[in-house]
Length: 163
Image (cartoon, one colour):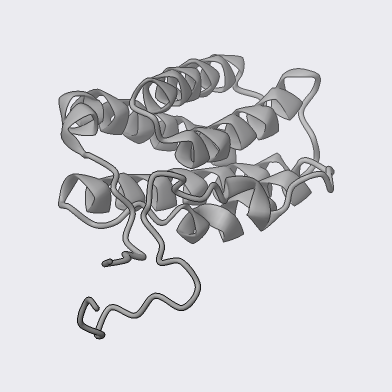
């Protein structure tokens, strides 16, 4: 019996929506840049919130739950900008921008055929959570084992001939 450590994620659904997702991530980054320069820009805050919400929805539709959690955590950080501009909004905008870059690279890799390894997003996920003043995120939140993978039973050996 052959085992695999590679994810069996099929990138075909992502390929259909990757252009729209990337467009929204680029727009979000542009608005994060605006927020870094002008922390009180309500239009930029609303635009980035809308763009990230679209990204989250699309990721959920194509079965990328960990990537969607990262996007949701970015949305939560942006929500903290809406109730009054925090003093460190420029720093938080930079952290959020970085998460969108990480997400873009991750999705680009999936479209190119790389394995779905959601733990690659963990550092950004935890950093976003801390930036918004929370401590309820853990890297393990992004981990979900592939329950469809075939694993050998104890004592089974791939190399031994059948008896």
